[in-house]
Image 1 (cartoon, rainbow, N blue to C red):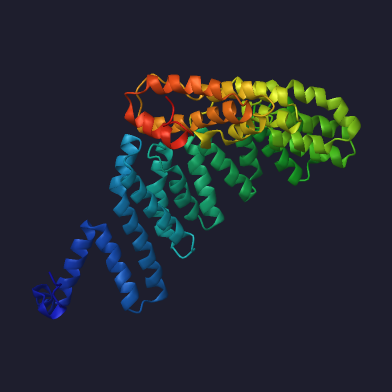
Image 2 (cartoon, helix red, strand yellow; image 1 turned 60 degrees about the vertical axis):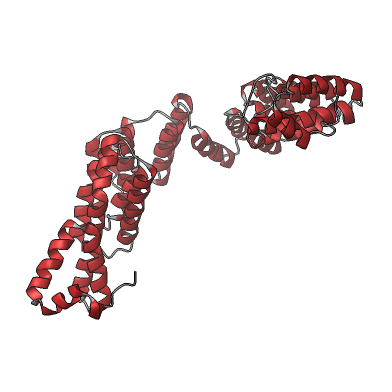
Length: 417
């Protein structure tokens, strides 16, 4: 149906006859119960009438409060139930982002910013809506002055939980409030990152001896997240010419969740003599690394027998994207260790006697193609392939989907008899 023109709309005709005061009453009444309408009214007036600077600021503030009123019912529900469906979550998140972006333009009057902070802080304290990042973004964007930041830090501190205290402590440090920063920092010195934060604070304050005392204590007492602290001490050891201490710290860094990249980086740091001292030590830690990283390191060192041992103690992955490196390595090792790689590929076939969805038949067909390749192209044992393949085919003769997918992927499958 065609939309009526303004001149044909009975509502427009009635509005034309209404006194200004009545129109104002109407718009205010409708906008009061419909936040989206209120926001649209404010945007319309901003576009079509000339406002004084103060009116513009007031209008911007009112738009943000209208945005908040629009999202509040859904946010209440998310907070009450610990999250919600994707649409509600996405809707509230987008409106919170819009508020934060508007606040970040630094044009919102203090009274409106305070109102928004008063609105958002209870949800931050609850932490149950699943939108912490968005809520913190609004709170931070609402702070324009040091007094704003100080009040926010005090609010976080009052909440008492570790994460809120972390925010409070970072704000106090940013403001240069030494006493409050140190008070909160001393409450939580558990991880290496905690000790690094305190050591870095003292170092930047010119208290270098104190900084190193804290860092050394952290190296002995810190539990996890040690990277920044070790690098902090290592940098000072290197500057002081203490090569032995520097390498010892870099070694500890390398073996903490050892990876091939860490292995190579540490090897690059060492001279030939230094590597001779550390090589056995780092290899002794290899068993603690993830299988993929063990495999990478063994292949990097060209220790192929050890590499195939790592590879074959695991099953062929169900999804190629999940273990791309392992599959690439298997292909590289096919000619060196064909029987071991064949066993690895066979592990990917799983139980071939059970029914499965077509997509699982498709996956298994791709694995069977690898089995064919190793038996026929690498081992040159076509009879062995034929005997195995015929048995598999006969066992699944009543599964048309199985046969179709294997025929698509495996060379000569249809001709097998």
